[in-house]
Image 1 (spheres, rainbow, N blue to C red):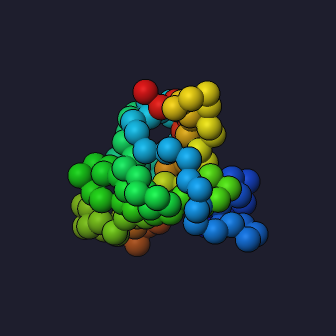
Image 2 (image 1 turned 45 degrees about the vertical axis):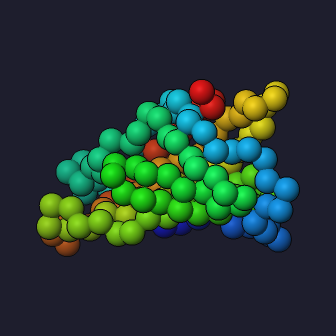
Length: 144
């Protein structure tokens, strides 16, 4: 499934080419109402290792090219690139005798005035009892 994460990242342009942290950053900070797509897991283990539900609202705090968010009580931070792609990473969490990682990857699509839309995915890796589930859940949503 790591390969599909890489493919998703390539499709979004995250981490590709000569992208650099933005210097003339658009206003990305704000709260977004998210519409979630279907969770796609890499293996049968995903049926029992489902990640926690993805949020239907995401609030991004912005300072220049640095983005921060709190998801499920955990802090995430990342960088807004000059391509308007972003990636938020948090610490690995201990869950039910195993571990979970969540990465948020996406792209900001500017709109008129202060509007805009996020498109991306919540990418999770869950490990418990020797089982592994890599999964992704796409999202899209306008700034509220």
